[in-house]
Image 1 (cartoon, one colour):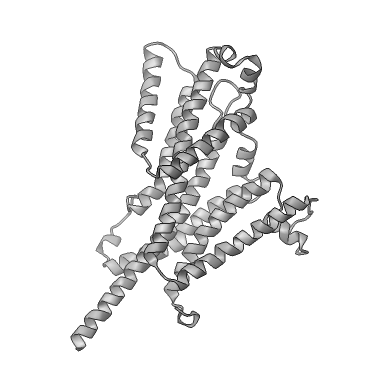
Image 2 (tube, rainbow, N blue to C red):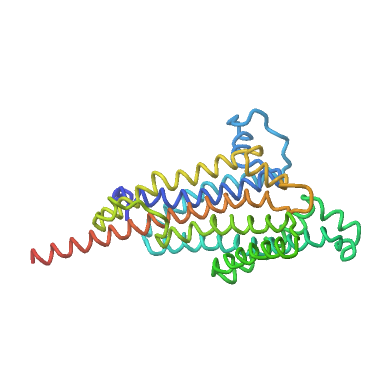
Length: 336
């Protein structure tokens, strides 16, 4: 395909791919910027004299170098889709986006499973005053601090969860649903039979429940399982359904994901960044210290849905082109 032969659907294809890749780069660079003190795109451009920041901090030479790499990743996120479109393969692009979305959700799924179990166990032994006997007084005191538990317990478990997802791509939502039911049943039994209930028990159920709904959204989208008001849609032809899905995703789906990401991650004081960078918790008592991770659920939701909406668009573009080619072939056969 040459540039002079670029069609409208090629432009839509590019928008879908670049939106997904830019979303991934934006989230990644957001935390490189705020955790490691790197300039990011705005800071790098300000260092080059564009004055996008009111005050440019004094960055180290290493941070400036990383800032340039961060800026280059945004260019790659725009150029790479062009390369993919010039070597057009809808099935390849759709599979690529699906695999990335699956990897994001799978890593989040396993991380939530591990963090939930371990954090609930720590909270339980703290309540029963067993923790000092197990790990010593100093470590027991440190595990009562959200920042310590986040850095030395949650982050290693998230890394392990990501590694598990890398080697095992399956997403077993049924097990998470079963654990939620088991957790709720345990609360009922301990409350009404043994008159025992602690804050961490409700925290664990809410933690997993939120993950189940937000993480499964992208999976549900690819299987067309979301609730749809199809009084009009059901009567459409396959071509009109494809066009509706393309422009619905393009006008409503992708912008919604970007609104969530930009509103939550635009700067250090944005809601998601504020919660995650400060290890925000619901209570300093004996509940679970996972509220800040639940802010991260919305990032996972928006990012996985962004990739899945883009894949959804490409899938329907492919469907339209296949129908168009089939129709042209039929016309040629009739003419012959």
